[in-house]
Length: 140
Image 1 (tube, helix red, strand yellow):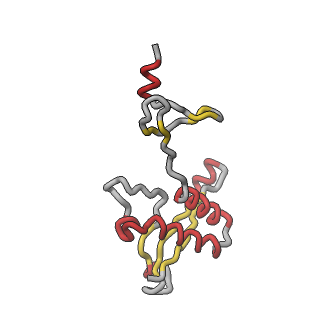
Image 2 (cartoon, one colour; image 1 turned 90 degrees about the vertical axis):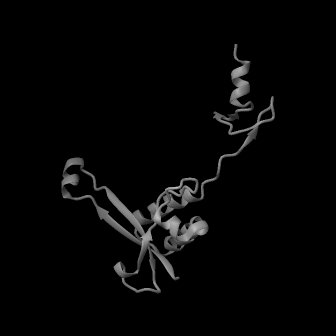
Image 3 (cartoon, rainbow, N blue to C red; image 1 turned 90 degrees about the horizontal axis):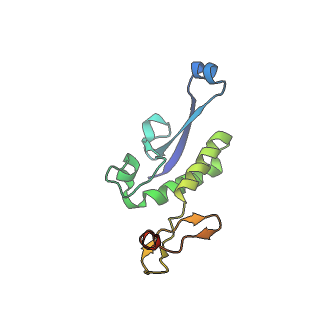
């Protein structure tokens, strides 16, 4: 499979422009297979989703088709498209999606009192040191 991304940029219409005085843009990124054909509608595989959530049972078509390597494949396709694309709106959309896909998972901390794992919250420059159970016990 010779996969690439095809970017389609469209406006919402003239009426919306008159009402809001700005031109909203909708950008769709489609996954195409160049081994099938060279022209867009015939080589369509699926639409690249905005969100990847592997924990849900209701997965999108891209995840169900490419299974475990779907996240890595999406990052690879987006990086290739970023090098070749010239339109600034599409480049901005690709960078947003790459940022979402490359986001770091939450760091797990250990409670200072009971040594239990938990997800600490940030308070300005400081980090939560005790879990919520120990915090609630210490309150009068």
